[in-house]
Amino acid sequence: MTLTKSVKDTGKIKKKNSLPADYTPSEDEPFMNNMQVEYFRWKLLDWKAELLEGSREMIETLQDGTRNIPDVNDRASEETDRALELRTRDRARKLVNKIEAALRRIDEGEFGYCSVTGEPISLKRLEARPIATMSLEAQEKHERRERVHRDE
Image (cartoon, rainbow, N blue to C red):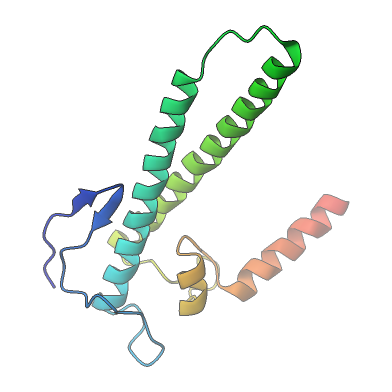
């Protein structure tokens, strides 16, 4: 399967590859075959492009929005909005890092497999959360352990 360069169009990456436009991974095909790997690669790249475009727009809004507001209440409201936007931007930055880590796992041939058990992560889970590193069972066990240690 050969890929050509991607083309950016309104913040989304246009796919120029051999994946059919309506392709969706299926349990009926071999796990993490070339088509599934490319499907998730493009899904991650599209998601990353969306987040970066949103961050760029947010930065522009924050820079344009700097103004001197005489009313104390209005100023406090604007500062609260700005803090919320900055927190949202920080979450997006962390998500971009996780997407980049998932793309590295694709390149290394480790994508789609649980980092704890080595078993395949379900396609439904990967479809919902393509940055997942653990199977649902391993994630639940991990979260239970975290709760127990947090409560101690």
